[in-house]
Length: 243
Image 1: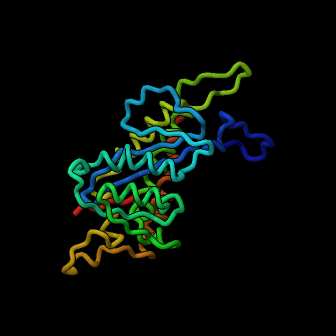
Image 2: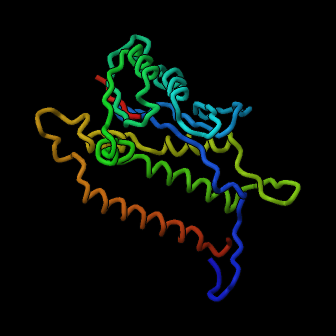
Image 3: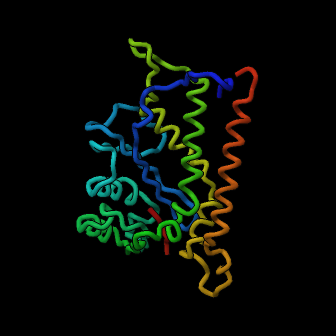
């Protein structure tokens, strides 16, 4: 934000705006949430304390692939409540190619898990995370990043460029943003997608309505933008699961 007519507006940057990480979120129809998994773009696991209950993995491009799915199965899915007794479970996830390899299917079958693969193009209607949870989670992480950029205690490189946030700090942001997603919101997400609704029809009115959802999302985005501007105006400057 700058005066009208100015030809140059300086912004604070670390030069890493195009860097990305992948975060894998998993939640349950009873409202509980499993550990988030973060995949950093690098070859070696970063040396961090990681006291934030986040599963850390690495991949050269920072993407989810078949190998990362096996790691997710071992460190996240296998750690869920009921897994030791091989409790029968039902996993709903999209048709992303890494989700449906033979190795991944075999690993999940070994966990006594039945799969429901959402057809391509329908995740915005049938995937609880996509319908209700991904946006508030991303907004939560973004707020923490913006707060850090605004008034955090920063370190600088020899050339004077501000250093990017550490992997430890990113894990902390992810953990806190995921923790802030309420149990009620998770429960509602499954109802909206018609996964855990009562079979007697009494909860049919809770199923996702695309028009209402679009209006709610627009209202939430407007509220988020207002919040950012207001914050900057300070003059002092059977189980059900989803992946």
